[in-house]
Amino acid sequence: MPLFPLAPAGTLLALAAVLVLSMTPSQPRTGPKLLRLPPPDTIGRMPVERALLLRRSVRAYSARPLALQAVSQLLWAAQGTTTPDGRRTAPSAGGLNPLEILLVATRVEGLSQGLYRYSSSTHSLDLSAAGRLAPLFAKASLDQDFIAEAAAVVVFAAVEGRTARKYGSRSSRYVHFEAGAASENLALEAVALGLGAVVVGAFDDERVAKLARLRPGERPLFLMAVGEPAVE
Image 1 (cartoon, rainbow, N blue to C red):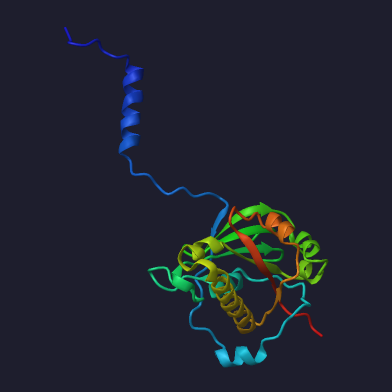
Image 2 (image 1 turned 90 degrees about the horizontal axis):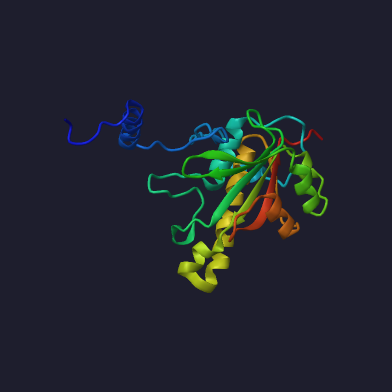
C-alpha cells in the first residue's frame, strides 16, 4: 500500500507542466507594436562643415516619403546611444538624459501612420497611437499647416525631474541646453540626407502633450517637421 493515495493521472500531468514552466528561463516580452530600426550609418557622406553651410529652416515639403533608414538616422542623431554605457549623441548634464523623443509618421516607408515612441537603448520604435495625427498636431500648433504636409514630425519632450534631482533650480537651463544640441544634431543630419527640417515652438502645450500621449512628468519642448524640400 502506498503511503499516500495516488493522484489522478490528469493532476500529475498538470503538476508536471507547472514544474517545467517554472524551470524555463523567462523570455523578454515582445509584441507587434515594437519595431527595431535599421542600424545607423556612422560614416556618412557629407562633412559637418558642408551640412552647417547648407542648413536652413524648411517649411515646404514634397509628397515623397521618408525611407525607414532616414528615420533611423534622424532619431539616432537626436538621441541615439553611442557607447555601451549609454552615452548619447547629444551631451546631457550629469548623463541624466531627460529627453524623450516621439515620431509622428505620415509618409514613412515601412511604418503605418501614427505616433511612435523612440527608445535610445534599443534603437527602436513603439507604437503609441495609430492613424493620421499630423493634422491634429498642426491644429494644436496654431494652425501651422506645413506640419501636416511634412513626411514626419519629431516631438521633443523632457522629464525635468531627472535633472532636478542633481541640479535643482538650474535643471531647466541644462535641459534646454541638451534639447538645443539634440535639435541641431537632427537638423544637420537632415541636411546630410538631402532633407529639410524646422523647429516649431508655437503650440498649445496641453493639447500637444495629450496628442503625444506624454506620461506623467513629461512636458513638450518643441516639434521638428521633417521631409524632402519642395522644388521651388
